[in-house]
Image (tube, rainbow, N blue to C red; front, side, top):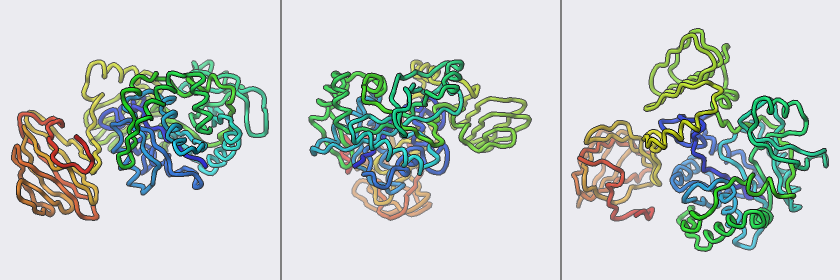
Length: 466
């Protein structure tokens, strides 16, 4: 049996800003109407089990909502209390997989890849599984098509069989000159970050080469708590876990690795130039999205979410305009990650908070805010409800703009239809519910001398939040 393990914990900083703030790119619709995460799930082999998702605690409701949208089952969503890179994340999934004395083959995938030939992707998985069944660690490698400096490379030895290569070494992201040499040789593959191995094989190799990671993850899983589909581990042990990638912790050290060619149009779109590569372009090689007007512009990526961008006499630029941030960069720039780290060090709100916030009942979009007020567009999923709650410092005005709302306000319970409104005074116990089979949308206007998200006192909550 193959159990897919989808790693979905990236910060999204290499593609900043693709939404209002640093929202992880895997949860955005960058290529088509589906998000990268959803496309990763939908391209899984039909004979594979339902996937296990490993994600950051703060993204749990995003994952749940995006799975709900495509009506896809899962084998659990493992929540990492903090980001510790891919080696611990895969260890948690492997330990979870062997709990019932099973030893399945794990198909480890990142949630932000583009793979355009799904049939060949499945063929590569089937080939790699043969080696995984035999106790090997299979890495899917992609033949370079250009001198790419943003990917890691795998150097292989001579051909050992008709469909696999023995590994000689791993190469970090190279300089342009070195990437050109790799491209000219037939002994280098891009490291796709897609792996297949038995759960026990990975854990044995992790214990051998990184005993601290193995021990911390094992202890973290000794007191697992399950909350619906969410799997919560022991935070105190996991916080002590070293942070290392699966490549550095295991793959560069093991003698069990083999490379299986992945002959597809693959990209992890780790940069704006990578996204530009896979997008449809106009006659001047521009990617244009949103309200954009160009004159004498070439080889550029220009994206607007909310207003007109006019660009004149430029080339090889990225211009990304969102609700509260504007990015202007060289298309080939590799400095965005460092720039984002600078924003975080300066405690800029753009680096740490998101306009769209997901909750187990749906999500809200912070439309506007200022001194003593905030306006939210709230979306409540069918058959869902918010907690029974009250606020110490703010009052709220609700206007239904779509659907039918069930309102609890103090001792009163009543319904509101479209274009109807109500007022929730400060300190009043209240709840918003959607008992229908269609989405509910309201506009919420908060007023008060403090409007932070922590001004919520929950009396009852279906999702067991404090």
